Image 1: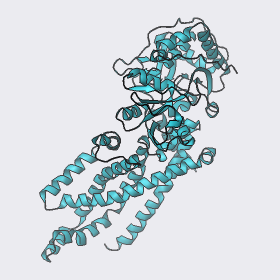
Image 2: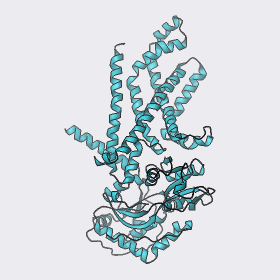
Image 3: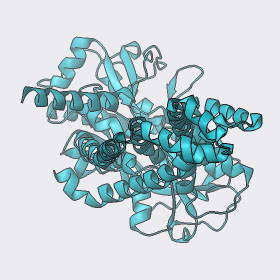
Length: 295
Length: 218
C-alpha cells in the first residue's frame, strides 16, 4: 500500500514538475520596465491573502506572455518586456504600491496558466487571457480590460479571404488545440486545418505560402500585422467575442475588487486610452473601452 | 473522471492518431532499420559508409529538429506537390527516419552476437553474403534483440507525442485542448499517462511471448 502511495506521489510530482518546468524562464528576473505609472503609497487591501503574500515577499510576480508582439513581448536582445498586457500589468502593480524594480515577470505559456495561478507561482496573470466559465472554476478574473474578437491574418495581396465564410478550401493555421481552431473545426469553416506550436510558426508558414490564413484574436493578429505591415493584413471582420481578464487566485474577493477598482480608475482617467495608443493602437485601428464586470 | 468523460472524443481521437502513427512508423522503421544494419555489415565499402553516416547524423539529431525540418523546411524544396494530409505523412517520415537509426544499431548488436564460426561455416558451404545474412545471421540476431527492440518501439510510441506540435492532433495535443477548454490539466495528464501505460502493455506481452518461444533455440 505504501509503495503504491509513493508511486502515485512520484507520478503526480513528476507531472507537476514537467508542467511547470516548461514555462519559467530561469535567470529571467533582471529585466525591468521603464517607470511609467505613478506608484501609489500606503496601499492596504484588507483580508487579501494574495496581497499579504506580495507584501511579505516585497515584490510582485506577474505572469505574462513573452511571444506576443504588441501585447506581451520580450525583446530577445535587451530582455525588456513591452506591449499592452505588460503595461496593464505594470499599472496594476504601481497602483498596488510597487515600484518598477519590485516587479518580476514570469513567462507562462497558455497551457500552464491556471496551474501557475492556483499554485501561487504568479500573483496575477495578464496575457490575452479570455474570461470563460470553465476557467472561473479554477481561478478568478478581474476585467475585462480589453475585448478582442477572432479574426484572420492574410497576406497583403490576398483578396479572396474577406471573412470566415470565405475560408472554404483554404488552409487555416492556429495554435494546437486553441479556442480559435476549435471554433473553425466546430463551425466547419474549412477542413484544411494546420495546428502548430506557436503563432509565430503560423505566421512564418503564411509568409512562405504554405497556408492561406492565420486565425486567432484580432489583438494578437494586429501585433503581427503592425510588425510587418508590408507583408500581412488583418481581415477585420471579427466572428467571436474574447473578453480579456486579469487572472487572479480564486476566492480572494478583496484582491479582485482592488484590481477591478484600479482598472476602472484607468478607464476613467484616460490612462487606459494612453496605454492602448502607445501599444496596439500603433496598428492604426481604434479600440472600444470595455465595461468591467463588478460582480 | 469528468475530464475523461466530457472529452472522450478528444481522448479517443488523440489516441487513435497516436496508434496510427506508431503502427505505420513502427513497421517502416523496422524495415528501414534492418536494411541499414545490413548495409553497415555488408562487404561493400560505400554501403558501410552510408550506413555509418546515416546512423551518426540521424541518431545525434534531436527528434524535434527532424520534425521541424519536415514541417517547415522540406515543403520549401517543392519536391512534393500539394498533399492533403501533409503533416501526418511528415510525422510518419520523421519518426521512421529517426527510429530507424536506433533499430539499425539494435539489429547490428544482434548480428554481433552470432558466433563468427557460423558465418565461416556458411561461407565454406558456398553461401553468398545475402544468403548468409538472410538464412543464418539475421534470424539468430533477431532472436537475441527482442528486449532492446521492444524498448526502441516503446520509445517510438512515446515519441509520437512530439507530432502534436506539428499539426498532428494525437495524444500529446490533449493537454492543449483541455487547458484551452479550462479543464484541470493535471488530471487530464494523469489519464494520458495511464493510457500510454495501457498501450505499452501489449508490447510487453509480445516481448515476453517472443522471448519464451525463442529461448528454446539456444
